[in-house]
Length: 334
Image 1 (cartoon, helix red, strand yellow):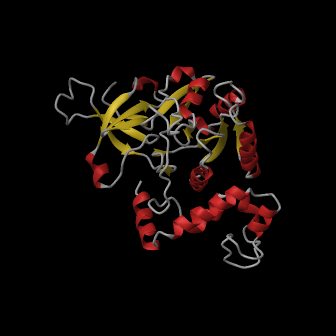
Image 2 (cartoon, rainbow, N blue to C red):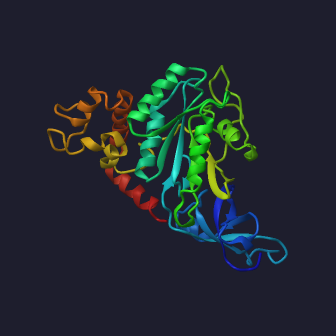
Image 3 (spheres, one colour):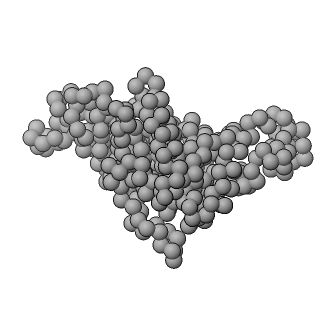
């Protein structure tokens, strides 16, 4: 690599060091670069994230930089979006893995991540896993999220059921980027949901670390620990997948994911009800004449989804408005 500026994408960050993969549009840039970040980012309260599009230069200020390949991130492009849990930026799609059993489906956690994705303009795709272990539960989950308007895949990583259809959908995504934009996706779910196992089946070359589920604790052993983007080539096009750590801290009282007034807009099956309630300012919780509740009672909204909406709303209301405003300003620095 020459001493020029290189455009790339952060694929991993550990201990203040970041792996940057040069963009394909710059074929002469060479392979992945291990980089530090300029001190200005720390002073500005900015943490580089996997998914960030960055500019990299040779670090001529470091001792030995002339003899060794040492590089530094000098610029981070404006982010399309930021996902706090798991920590990723600039996602286009997120695959929400919900196991039919072992562990028991955690629909509130799934619905929190789906709502956050909606608020950030990330397209959620629901993958119901372990369908071979509990077909009845798998069918119920498929009905809940198809009714909500999401694309749903019912799969078994063990038997291969549904994996072909999911692989074809992903291949179609590879060619969907406009103007050469690379599709960037994440596979997310609770610990033990089977994220890494599924990705390894879909793309064996990834060689991801996985762990068996402990029957005693129903938690994954040796499961994925760090968020990392993996490049995958499909039909000559490159996609990035993030196999994320199991998450359990989608805490709306701790993190400011989106303004409370936006919550109804993050449940897409509510969309045709907004503005049609009997009373202005309807909270869609239990009011008489609420169009959302009427649709739920008619079967157009799954009760579990409405339960999640109420639970998330209660969490958001626990956080003072001044604290939300302060965190929103900090979040929007980049």
